[in-house]
Length: 627
Image (cartoon, rainbow, N blue to C red; front, side, top):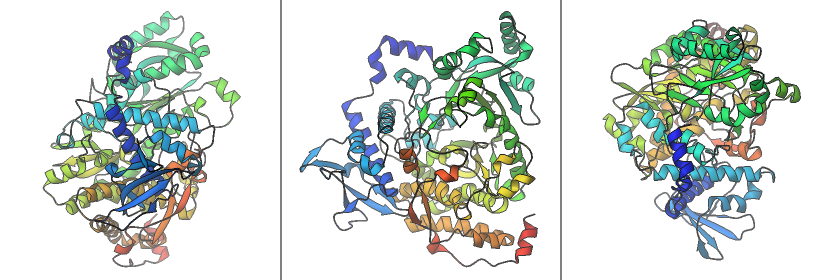
């Protein structure tokens, strides 16, 4: 923990909540209520009633509480993919005709029956909403927060990372972080931008496993990450404990995890010298948007470090499985070779950041007590991920793709600033972006049956003159899959878990839900709201991107036809329904498809822009081309 921050807040406790003023709290509630109504309506959890005709694309709507005693009225524009663009200033809460202050927590309680959240989980969800509001208020009170105009020209990747305001665009309770107290928030939250030093521990090899890609060994990793002098110092410390250093690995942990989990839940292992606390790192880091991943600010050439963090956030305890860690580098190496060996992806510039090494520590007490998957088995793991900075050419810079949805505290969006500075029109800029982002995802699916989790935080865009030129994918091992169970027999050992058995009609959801609904739906609103283009302009550009890719690959025509990107509608897999159904563990990681929550179908916004039916090739020719 940053000692200066902690000392200040513990000596002046009121400072921990100094950002919670009536004005900023009212603004945070209004904005979160806008998102709650929009996303719950998007998922058909609530169904707003229209009160009047359209005026300039907007109409008046209302939502009643479960008992119809409370009425929320607002103006909204209905966009593609059942998206609700709500004017926040228009939201009013009426009780017996009298206007009342907006309160996001009270809205959840008033609509709890339709939300369908179980009685025992409701308090946890309310905690997550409160924490989300707490963080929103902090971000809106930051005096040094750069404007969108300033971010558009920011050269430093970390300046942009720290400045992000919203978090996940779909989840309503998206910054729960349950487990952090107010001091922890200021020390470890990405938006706080605090310096963090990880804690190094020596862990006994009887419990710990190290894995790495074939070109990187344990000694080399340590030499590059902490240096030989520190390795020697840690080795002496272990010897002074009366044990053999050769029996131990050196492993980093999040400071919060050491003080709150490892030193207590693993106390027996600490007492038996199976875990030995060594020291804070000499290097300093900043937390990334994913909160448990750190960027090294002391030496910007070093790798990211990602650690287990047992806080509850967006439906999961944010641990790392030691079992998955053992196969993580092998999976990354396989995917890297696949991507780099594909001429089309190589020409496109698409690449991945490899998770090059990992460690996991097994707590045999929890394993013996709990046979099923549980966060208790994921409290102590770490991995190292490649740094994207060495991938840049002169004049290029990095930007998290989440930034395309960023709106600063003054209500100004970043995306229009980028487009304006690029010198391109909106549609030409979009074409460049889609070529960098969507095209490689289409190719991975159609050519390799390979899907990622390509949401904004998992993608890093490379920009040149404010224009995306290529995309870098990260978070590989836990969030990619080969949608062909028969591929398991062809995959190397430790990699075969990539092959999954998914119903055929679910396979394109990796594009339709994760890309169209999860990313492009929100980009469309930003552009329409800022009069950058029309909805038809936007979705026509997406359709053109798909058609251009398919036209360039006629050898895959049968597969394009079978998995048709231009179908009239597709299944709507819902995120908030998942979280509301079980906000402690919303997905069965052993069988993710079984956990999906559907809410009707979504009309495909590119269906009307189908140019033509692609020419078909004989099935035997298709099979030969895909070998």
